[in-house]
Picture 1: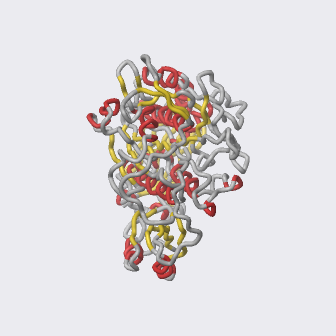
Picture 2 (picture 1 turned 90 degrees about the horizontal axis):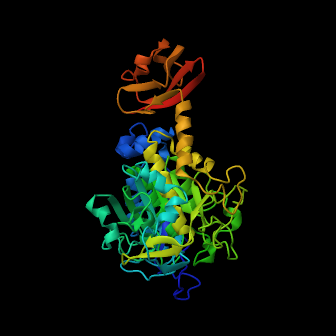
Length: 536
């Protein structure tokens, strides 16, 4: 989605000295932090740590919270401070030019960036065009049969995977009606709505501003008996309002980052973001096609950071296919996330669906799902139909969530790879439909085979207790296991035969000091080395 604002700007060409604007202030370091990468439990949830363990990633200084003293010193200049970003190492402020010059002179500030003119808007928003191309009424039973069946979500649900235990964060422009419409009430009754926040107005109210998020959420979560079934209607949901439908400025990309960091810390498994950016209400903020390389847009850099931390990020490819821009929009250009294009009921590309490639010539979109005539729940609670890549994205997010549930030990990156490998154009991808239409059944089978072929599993990679487990899939002779530090000093191990009755070898980690260690397993059928971090 790209929010298309109705222009009501007050005709400025330069900002007066007293004009209050929004800026992001970047800090030079995280000196004297009270947090440590060796104790991630102090700033990450247990589920976030577990997800990173599955992905095999360690915390870095980038994950540490921002220096609170720096924020207080910025606030002491008279600027209003809002949200901090660990990944960008800074804080969003609202201030005038005179105070900004004082902030820029602070010794710990490296730079400031204008992210939006004017003060932070509070309260209501005007409803604007939101990237969904059309809406119509729908009648009849089982209106979601096509969109579920096209990527075998119906088979996924029949196999017992409806999203239970999976956490999904949705970033969008508003959820009008979700708190009142009956098709969403099971989310509240069953405690599935875990968190919500409005980064646009700095309030807890997300049931306002727009109904784009309502319709996107419905594709995943709504239920009308015998009429409408969301893809993973038993999942847990985190709703973060990041898109301001009354304007289009770079602050929304920073809002996306704030939401992604919050989702990361909470341990969400999947992010669905039916949002995209290329042009803004200030032309100086516009992106050029050459910047669509996965690292040129603020939101793309943030999305890559989320991917690197083991979150499966699913985003709409964009609705620019029939417009002059034509190409995908950021963050769909990021390698490792799933950029989703749109198809119709026959499997043909929808005319509005954005094309790839990225500017560095990578295939995009990654996969496709139904985006023309998708059944949705409107803000009033009725069943309707709408079109846009915004609605194809939550179908693929549902697929990813079902695979997370079916394969809880799989690396998130392996789930993404399986979705690509199972798609019907995997051997002949193009920049219209990417790798094509995926299937739960095929992706499930790919992951099952991969799990069977994995002879050895070493867990956990972050040692919070006093042991590391080495699990073998089958008995083996001539096995050697040892644990050593980065200087090569050995701290324990074993050698010999692994029997059927003892396929799990427990290594004692109680003797380890906090730090980085290597566990190496040598077998006649291959060797395995995994880095593990011992925490406090």
